[in-house]
Length: 274
Image: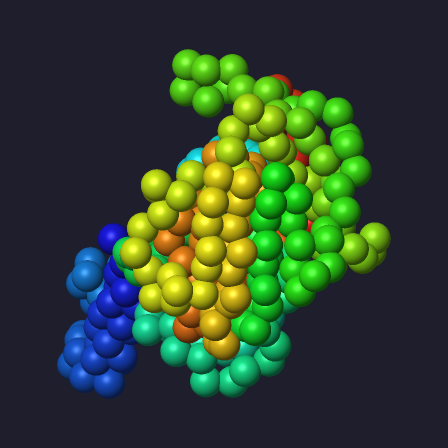
């Protein structure tokens, strides 16, 4: 379901009804006569719909985290806000960039349209940008020959369906820069990548896979994405690179989580996303 298109249509319809009534029907109504219900509702909803449409299209859009692929950074059920203008101003609905401002950087958590099904939104972390050589061997990440250091940070456990999963948690430093770090989870029993699960994708010839990991050169204008839950994430390892025009914005804020509200803990509500 294209919610942006539905919102645009509702905004346009209510706005047109309000405008036509003001320019034509209102003048012919008897003084003191009540407005038709359809006009009254349109006048009430149009400004609200317009504000929501503009905010959602150009400033920030809410998303809900549906899977465990970004644990421990983002948990299932987190409601997040995505900055829509940080990388540039895009036309609503068609998402065409008209005013470039910046580009996604390594370490950013971004929402993008899934290359294999552009009607579906994914959220992952940017690991490589155009021209980068991304290598992941034995659960260790290297970009352009620079390792991303990992520091052990205990364990992380969560319920996945009927299974209880426990991961080794680490603090990983983007490009080795201590100022840019994030948390990842690793299942020590899993392989770094499963080559048999890799689907055909554009640029596949730029990648080399084996049971110890992979090495890929990212094409210009594309990004290599991975989930922070490294062994439970369907990401660029398996379906390839994300074109720049598929990027929707950068995730920056957790604004709601039902578990926090129910427990009155508020551990995640109001926190930023690293």
